[in-house]
Image 1 (spheres, rainbow, N blue to C red):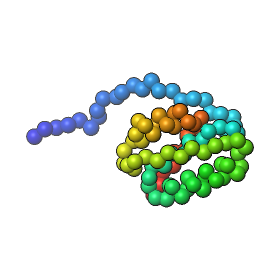
Image 2: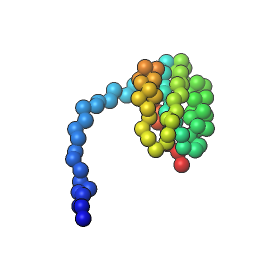
Image 3: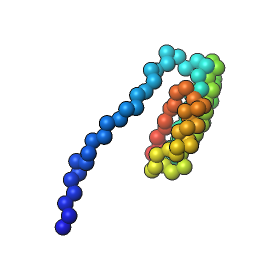
Amino acid sequence: MKLCSPLGHSVTSTLTGKARPHSLEGLRIGLLDNTKAPVDKMLAHLARRIEERIPGAKPFYVSKSVMSRPASAEAMESLRQNTDVVINALGD
């Protein structure tokens, strides 16, 4: 019999977030779809509302390829290069 500890080992992260913007006006807003239903419909609606209500804001849509896995390195790089802020939508 092999016993395994559920505690694991802690890992320190050096990631830091950016300060929140005071306004979304003129920003590129990333919309990250986790591919669960009905996120695609929610984000399409949100993109329309952003364009209607926030002057100069531009939605940028990215979809994960598999809902149960992290977004690909390519998707994350695309968001990094093309957006100022990101909204991650989860469905179910």
